[in-house]
Amino acid sequence: MPFKVHDGKKITDNKVMGGLERFAQLLYYAFKDHPTITIVPYEITKETRESGRALIQMAGGANTDAGKLIQFGDEPSGAFDLILSNYEEETYTTRLIEATKLPVVWIYHTAYDGTFGRVKSIRLFKKFTDMDGHLYFVSEHQKRIYDVESVRLMEHPVEKIKGFVNPAHCTGDEFVSNKFNYDVSTIARTSYMKDPFYVHRQLDSVNSVHTSVVVTTGGHHLESGKEKKYYEENLKYNETTAPRTTFRDLPYIDGIKTMANTKVFISTWPLETWGITSLESLSHGVPTILLTDSTGTHASEGIAADSSHIRLIPKTAPAADLELAIAELTAYTPEKRQEIALATQAKHSKQAFIDMYTKVFNDAVAAKKSKI
Image (cartoon, rainbow, N blue to C red; front, side, top):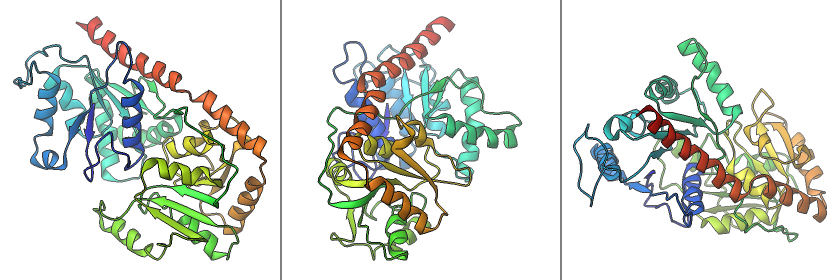
């Protein structure tokens, strides 16, 4: 499993950059003691990526005996059965198939944002699946959006996908808190698209009595001008005290504890493709508000075990609507929060996650053997 190292954070780091990195971490640990399947992370540093040697190193790592690089086009030595990729470049998809001759599973996590990169992905879907690559999306909500754009660009919806997979599971360490340090929380990286500071802005705009906490990243990883601008504009929210509290670069577990000790969680990105943070909030019994686009739908609806556990609000709705939803959900009893947690944990157990990916891996290996 190729794993891009960002800001020096390896797959085992206690600080997690985002949902994709959290998925890779969960998958790695879920199969750590599995009797027949081993996930081997292949960490790709920024220097390797910039040098253009990522592909040759990955191919060599997948096809070596005692670390010896093979030549491109050689048949694999049998060191590994398949490659699992979470990235949308050709280097990590079609070119891996060409370079290794191994089956490649590609899990597509990315939301459609209208940029050229997503247009390239739509074209890459066809090339990848035509090469017998195994393509999975993380939700039907995500694929519906890509189908619309694929019809526009390719005159057909996205074809030959193998199915849908969940990018997270409950860990078994979840707890339900009745000690509340804040009324409202959100967790997201500092990004104008994710927009975690929406929560502070909206509550400030109506002088809300509700306290809020934002758990986010710092600015050291930012690259685009838009991201830097968003970061700088929200440095005013730098207090670690109420009513508008911000924590940057917390270890993962501290972020979870902060969220669990709030009455309501808000998922601020309408284009979410699944929503690991929503799973984390609901599995800790925290009722959750999902901000939607004009469709009034959100991918994380499918995570909830019951519709009463969530509220859907357009992101463009007045702050008064947000306050009303917060008031409704903060009134939930300890018993209701316990119900939310237990139902979510039952729906998204670790064993169900392992079973799902065991089938994904076995299907890919069996298909390759069948073709041979």
